[in-house]
Image (cartoon, rainbow, N blue to C red; front, side, top):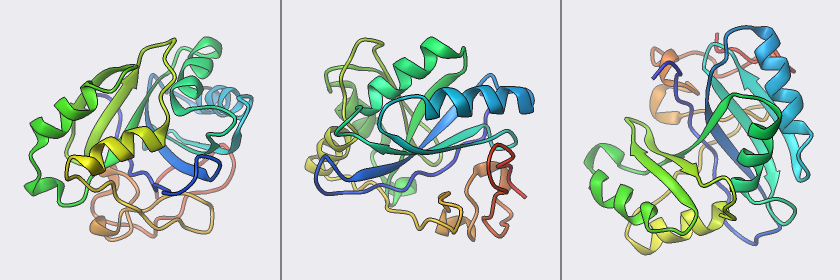
Length: 189
């Protein structure tokens, strides 16, 4: 795939708590693409923060799921722009996990269209008319012995992967400060 993957910070708790999500974003070619996707994400009810990385091909979103479930965020965004968003769920001890079991467990969740194992975790896409909540995905994985990672968030609200020395995306595996510039120019350094 043409995009680099980023890790998501997960939040457990009530459905009204905002969750920090990371999406792989296919189809980004320039800063105009970044601007369009950022604007589309921010227009969805419940989105508190949205930043897009051109270099990382990722979108970082803080979402209040009491207003809009994650699957609806993806569908509403896709109605406005052609970029394809795929949710990334990073899994603890992923290198030793039963990846096929994790994929099959999530494929059984109503509204999940596809699940792929990636080196960072699971990539999840949704049926366009589905209503799937992030907490439902995390709960399903937890019940089946998997732990979705909670990653620290830097001062810009973007996630970092502690296992990659602060890197937020696989493209920057050599490590960097984890900082991304603000607003629409949130590229890995």
